[in-house]
Length: 407
Image (cartoon, rainbow, N blue to C red; front, side, top):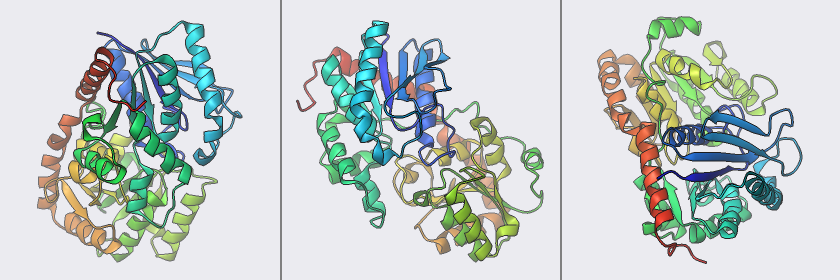
């Protein structure tokens, strides 16, 4: 059976490139790829996001069955996500108006992140349809991972309300489901574990020599890669501090952020200078998805030093390209990276990262063994499999009485 899905992403657009802003990352890729695969399977998906640039068309077709719908709620300008809650009523009203104009009766509303979840709760109630939500990151779990970075009380309150009211919560790993039940009081029966996915056709090993030549990197010096938002939570500074402790003089490639006017990038550049690393650190800014396989293939190892990851998309993409990963032993990364098989899991401390990076770079046999295992370890994350699991969730919710959600 085919369905019509209203997918919500209020604070960040599925069209945004990962790493370009603090709000653009793996979630953007996830929404776009999931919607595309659902569209291939005859499911109609409308991706609703806040309209931040009036030069963009109101409707953009990504696939015959998939559209991005820009909703005017607040000014035509980027707004910090902490300030967006006030515009959610307008967002809900405009989504409802669009549905009336198009004469669409949606079967499911599927929200991503807590702001979208708040809007989706209202839409699900008004339309009397099931609400599926995916937090991608929970404020309470972020606090547990890094108590020094407070989360807005409103976010914590709204996430708790979502946990009580959503018909189904999607967790990327069994570990995330356990954390949500233990830390947030969710009912395990209302949480479905569906992993994030990776485009296995795009993310595949490429010729390392050609990739390094394309990036103008030295062919004979090891390459260590970071990909992601330049948010302190993601830990690019941990990589720089680890590099200053390493015995191997590797080239460091940092992908993310804007090359001008980006305070986070400027702080990292200053840190690299103070650590005496500036001569071997390459800041490339955010890069489009189609370039990432070459970047992963050029590297000897990818580093993921986040405080916490609900899944760890960068790690999956790297492994799909045959490149080992050294990551924090936290969250979904423990599911993605197989310690001592496809990389290493370490405490979030520069010294531990330095030791494991030196070990990989010094041992060609170890690198070869990890490369040989890396891609095979992530084939289960193909998007077709992910979409099939999501469709199964949709079917159960649409075709059975809605008895789970608290009214």
